[in-house]
Amino acid sequence: MANIKNTNTNTIWIKFEGPQNENGFANLHKVKNGNKTWYILNYTKTKRPSSVSDGDEFFLAEGITDSRGKNIQVITGRGHLYGFNDNNISFESWIKEYNWMEYRPWYVIIKDFERIDTPIKNCLSLDKVLLNCRSDTYESSFGQNCSFEEIKRKHTQKIHMKLTSVSSEFINKELDKLAKKYGSTVFESEL
Image 1 (spheres, rainbow, N blue to C red):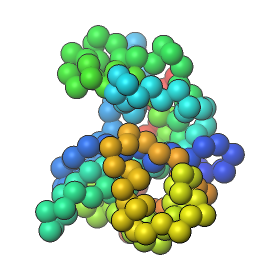
Image 2 (image 1 turned 180 degrees about the vertical axis):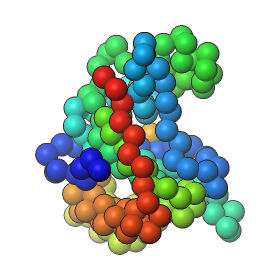
Image 3 (image 1 turned 60 degrees about the vertical axis):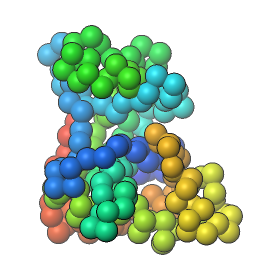
Image 4 (image 1 turned 135 degrees about the horizontal axis):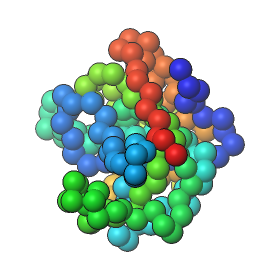
């Protein structure tokens, strides 16, 4: 299996995706560019991901509704990205296949992604990460004494955020446990 864990040499991101089927698997967007298959992360017209660099690590967090009816984010896998450039705008053929890309046209190509092979609801709750890492979860709150609710509000209406190595280490350990329990599959883009 490819080494999907962070090398701590690049930025670490958490990429937030909207409501998904809690009984489904990680929602990777698979597209074709000629005869090559790519997996991509999409961004809105106003959120160009210009700070994403080649080799950056990311964790995919997908929104679901928990058993109490609350919206939560669940981390379903980990991987690395190719750097963003100004040509990373969705092709018309992609928009025809995925009409939502008209509103989320910017993309970053996923280099590799390890998906935990279990329904989203069984993956790692972001709340568990926040409770464990507290203010040291995000770069923007590192070293501060924020309450759980303050930290949780930080990712509201964000498309992605920078994580610290503290939270990356915790997430990787938890994903290792889940991969051992459920198995995992690695997806790689063809460039």
